[in-house]
Length: 120
Image (tube, rainbow, N blue to C red; front, side, top):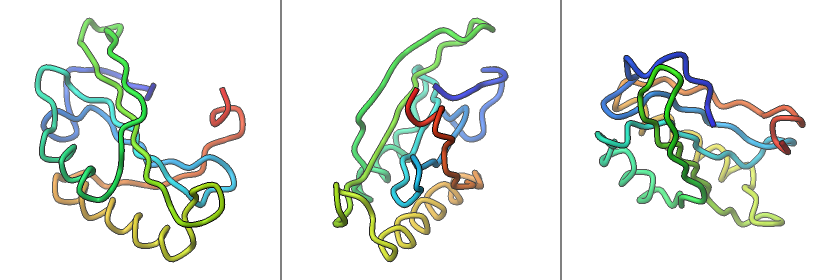
């Protein structure tokens, strides 16, 4: 679940928050979205699917401010060991993610999760 301050404003239509993060050592990134379940970002979700990202987790919850949130997690298999991304796949996939979210006005900052966060 992404940390949301509020559901009163969105970063793009239907999107409250976006996180692009990898578990250590940080070669294979996932896309984590907090979305408005009543106004889902259909074009962004379709574009993620076109890029080969598959949803592996979703959970609905009510934010402390009363707004409803749908938490979505996506991953994409690579060709490296354990379906990880090779260096060239990582560069290409991160560029595609950056372009996708850039088209809806969201700048992404890929990061590597802490060990505690990754395996909680």
